[in-house]
Length: 35
Length: 173
Image (cartoon, rainbow over all chains, first blue to last red; front, side, top):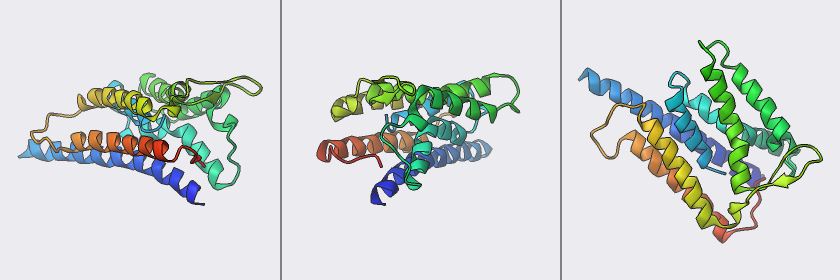
């Protein structure tokens, strides 16, 4: 079970982190342009 | 390959800005998600024939490309399919993977040399990130989300390679 969770956690991390930061980067840029 | 696959997704974002990064990331890790599903259901097998063989990856690429048929033009479908296929090509570089049922297992297996693996995967991550960054307007701060992303991806890769150095016998599933 620990091995399953480790593999899936690594996959989730490497998937979620770039998507989350991409959204922040694009949202940040649009609010910066509005200012 | 581990985090290097994310580098391919980032680079593909430059080629197809209309595709959400989440879609490209999911496409680049699709064979691994199949492995994860097999892992949970207890059907995972080191042979990885159902997830990482050429026929399996081609089928996954076709399925992933089919999700883009509503997008105008052919590039989005082609790019998503190519991103899925890139998974096995990069895995042949870093690991040892199946070709087809009954066929040979091939690969350079640089996983055995975690420092070399870190160098190769970092190269793919940085190359993809440099292309991806062109899809974003310039930020003034050094600690903007795009730079943080590069830092975290390299840190994750470093952590994985450090774990392989310290615990070489740990299995994927």
